[in-house]
Image: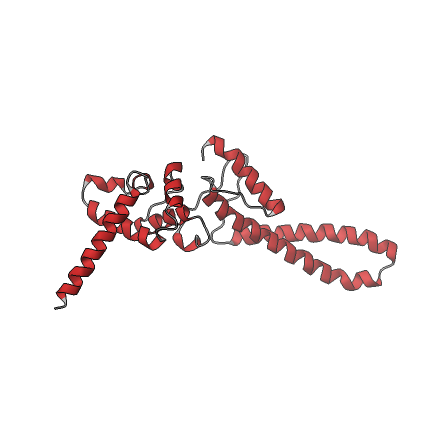
Length: 218
């Protein structure tokens, strides 16, 4: 991640941890934020379950203790409950098959998981298109140039993700075995200079294939 993006990314991550407020707009590090916020939510849920279990376990004894002893015991038990809940949350996250190795956040950003279409139904259109490209071509792109994101956002109402996937498949078949196969990247496929042209080419190819199939039936 470029150095100038680290500070706003870390601030957004910390802000979500305490306020559950997600970043606005479509910053280039949004896919990383989406992947990591799920880990934060999992830890918070485990911590809350541990706190409720501790309160229920000590509830009967609290009702029997004198008022003064109750106050002192409550403080001690709450401290123990929160410590236990945090430990449980950490253990669950560490045992998860998708868990990353623990790192110092000031030193290293956790490994990035490239966006895949199946987990991006509510994501911005440009991010769903990037997920479709990764899923179809087996690539691991994490972001794209700002001009490409703006191009996809403008076209969000005119095309579907499936149509974009069809365009990617068309260009892959067309460029297979040629020097142009290296251009199967977000920079080229989603560029303002090429995107709509490629979409129309793919649509025309699809219509031609349908017409040929209909003719072949007779």
